Image (tube, rainbow, N blue to C red; front, top):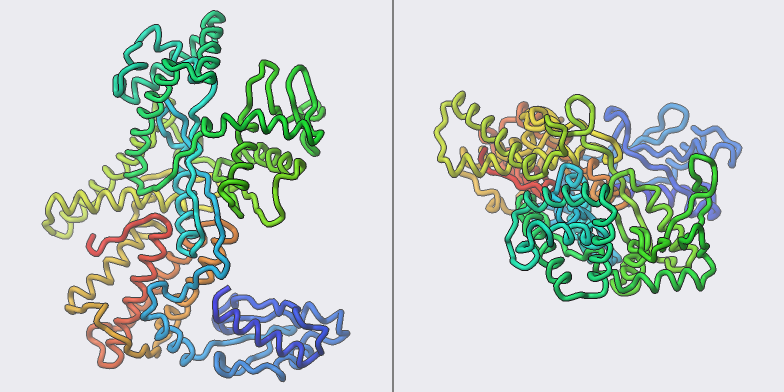
Length: 584
């Protein structure tokens, strides 16, 4: 809720008490943004909800509230509409004062959290010895944006990359490489990631069809878990090889992460089993140690267990996730732990959280949140794959986006008869291509699937990154044309006269409300919607109001509106992990 809404809400609560007594302290005035601007800016709907309790008509209740309501410093006189809505319209002088107040504020009026918390965002999480693919795109981009927003608000954020770096697949891969390419297990960089992936696939095929090889692979896992020097050295080399490849992607996407893989929690797994056993939650089922939970059944309708320790003594993902959960609460001191994974893992996390709560591991002041997301689909509406049916490599997808942006820019420069250096073209293509991919993902409600289309995401019109980057560049075009340094505008007064100036001003002042809502619901698409709407309102203002040609003091006032819009776009886009360009 933004500062204006908070002030109005407080004043409405005071009026409720003055009109109907102290019993109404704390009653929500149900203050919302007006659905239609012609009725005002805000609407209080509390009168309708109190009708039955007070035994009065809603309009009569609204009248009694308005009689005691003093919003004269913020709004025009309140109006009662329909069955009892209280409509509030912000005063132009109030809007001008608010904009004047945020001019010198680098945070543009967005307050830092009053009680900063230790928050963990668990995202990206690729598997060692496999290439990052399109399936890692959403977790990486959504998780980064959530982390950026929480950091901006002043929370102490730990960005964790829970990589798959332990388990049977390593025994399988090491056993196979001992036969076909032993140098890879002793020498750094003996293989590139493509070869490593190819060997992994062959090892998996062998593992699935050859019982003798299965046993050899299992023995390698035992050696790894026991800390055998040669196996451990081979494992470290394979991890480092993958890590370097992951870092190329993370640098391209400007992503910062702290790696803490599954192996980190391996020493803690026996303790998880012991604690669950002591708490009476463990049940032996077909030789495996399990926890049975309410609401989980198989296709036959029988209770579905969460396996904690397999019959052969091995552990499952759930065991590692429980160990990591305990560590993050007890050692990292996290108060909110956010897991950004695909929606297909929702049941898994529901079960893990439920086990942890039953075991008494989750303090009352710790919040666990699974942030699920849908699939990336091709233009045929099916899972996004290459023409040969393989999963799309993330590096290829990003390179292709930059290539598309490069071609689009070349075409536009030819049409505009503009000549730019190759350095300029490459930089713009990289920023636009990567930004387009990020924004296309973040602008969707994360719970939905979305169709991946280079043409749509690179469109200069519509709800795309290039559209907003173009608006930002347009504002800097105004500064270049008028030889204006926005930083030298000083604290001149904003004067709002035209309707498009008022509409833009009101929207600029909603940034704090939007960021606050994303902090709570972890839906970055709300910030995208805000930035898109802001860009549209700026273009309407730009089309209808002369800026450089206007007389003073209107000229400076409009330049300040330009500057505030550019700064808001830059800040908002940075929270999505998107760079801006002063020229495109």
